[in-house]
Length: 129
Ligand code: C2G
Image (cartoon, rainbow, N blue to C red; front, side, top):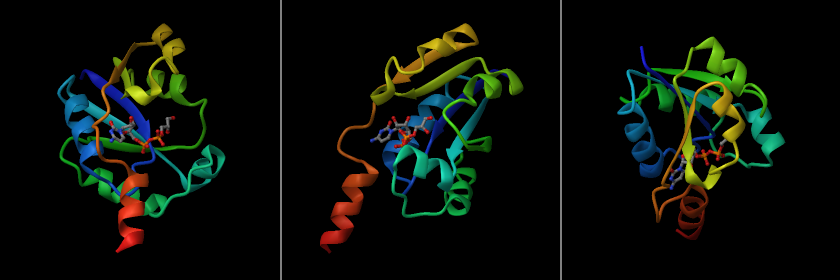
């Protein structure tokens, strides 16, 4: 099956995530999501509200997602592409250009982010109310 691979934290799952995953799923037959572990988020310097176990459950509940794997490090992508025989590696375009070296293994695509929504923005809104 034509396989798409993407990675992210997906904290406070929101419509920007859904819009990205929906577009990614439309590119092939199988969408696999690498979900950042809590430990990797520490390495990314990313504070997270929801623990990995919850973020994984929410991702698996998304109709566009076929499988979820843990993302432990920056360096597992090439191995994952081989492991799952991924045809496309894709991210939102805030990452544009950052993973171009993976084009040695598969097609690399960056899709436009959804404007007006972000986990950080949601955290500010919640904090104010
Ligand atoms: N995204 C989007 N639109 C938004 C917010 C996020 O399209 N309004 C996309 C991002 O571009 C990313 C994905 O949703 O492709 C997940 O976003 P994050 O959870 O913020 O992922 P990030 O922390 O950037 O982790 O190794 C890659 C990293 O794990 C990416």
